[in-house]
Amino acid sequence: MSMNISRLAARAAAVATITAVAVIGTAATAGAHISTNPSEITRSGYSRVAFQVPNESETAGTIKVEMTLPQENPIIFFRAEPKAGWTTHVVTGKLDKPVKVNNTTITQAVRSVSWTAQPGNRIGPGEFGVFTILVTGLPDNTDQLVIPTAQSYDDNKVSNWNQPPGDNGEEPESPAPVIDLTGSPTAGHEAAEPDAEHSDEPGTTEAAAGQDDPARWLGGAGLAVGALALGLALGGLLRGRRPTRSTPTDT
Image 1 (cartoon, rainbow, N blue to C red):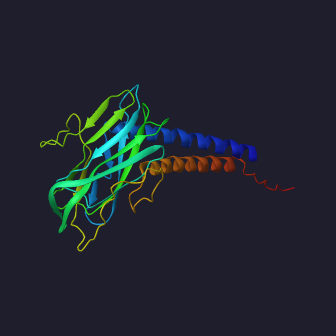
Image 2 (image 1 turned 90 degrees about the vertical axis):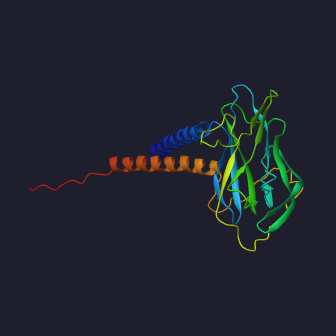
Image 3 (image 1 turned 180 degrees about the vertical axis):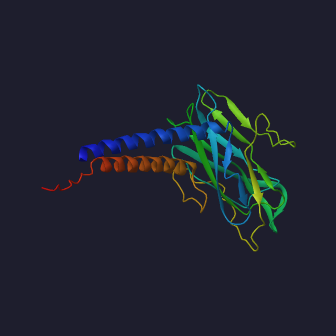
């Protein structure tokens, strides 16, 4: 009995693994270019945004991702989440001219953020990486943040995703990642000034409520399918081994 259960558990685990791989593969290839998750955030409160960066080369690996933040629509508070095996670098600079955001005059803001792969690390062919930021104090003078991004490969090629959305709704050839802004800023919101640089040490931070990392829900989908397959298999085994009751006969 225990041997059969072990075999069924192994089969269920195999089904879960195959399903998870299929889901991840679909997610990695569904978007041909860099995308944001979520693609829309509210101006009030803190928002965690994940940039999903697929490797589009069949032979080279991605070793650097650098994002340029808009200076005409500055973000008051910005943090970059460290990524294990990569060095994170945030550059803050003075704006060409002061900008008023949410009744606050901004004179300096984050100009760029980059993640550079440490030796032995990269996003290989057929893979994708996730790079995450935390923001609040979002501009109220635009409904959309366009974030040009340069993707560097280990064969010295660079893909520049820097074209804004077209007026007619058509996607340009090299579209920049876009974040849509909704809602109104929080009244009386006080946001801290961003640091000149972020820690280079790899690590993770807690996900904001309601905004989970793509890898978590992909893994959860695989586990859920595996648990369902195991339950069905065990149910079938127990039904097959249910003892039959003998019916007494008249003598």
